[in-house]
Figure 1 (cartoon, rainbow, N blue to C red):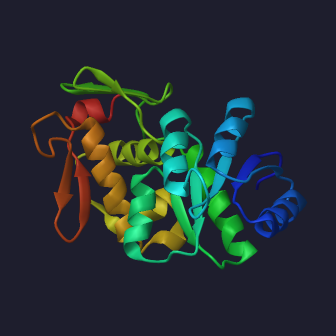
Figure 2 (figure 1 turned 90 degrees about the vertical axis):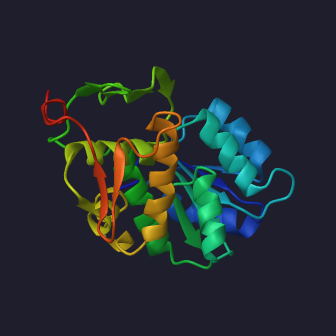
Length: 237
């Protein structure tokens, strides 16, 4: 549900802003609008926003630049809405900090499903995750959503953090691609392997020790990924 959730629409086309605002408001959402990236940043400085819907093709600050700027300062989910439907475009947007990518034209039902999934991920939790872990080179406080890698605090996006949380909950076991995708993004994403690759690469860049390759997140060929942690630590409260 999006009842009382704040949604920022960033799009330079008045008709799209108007239609989305009307439709989302009818579902109980609190809708804010911006015509470009600069306006979006100004809105975010003044308002609390739960989800950003971001167009890529805008004058002035483009969507990718706006996505990077938003992600550098805020942690809410970002859903890109774009007419570009190529694989490289999607990867570029995900690399810029987007959590999801929806190709125009889209149905309102699909967009609502994506928004609900993004909101679920932002509050993702699992009872099998320890409250804290501490191993050489990596400390995670799940209640504070705080990660320290190689002695330096690192900033994870909501999706990156939830992916790490799920890997920790399944530490030392191979986790299939499909299981990871369904757990973090939802059942409709079970074939989006490229999504997973992008976020695993981002997570590795942030938590793996400098100069060493894949100490924590290990690739299981043709299966998925495994997070390697001492068993006693991985299951501790």
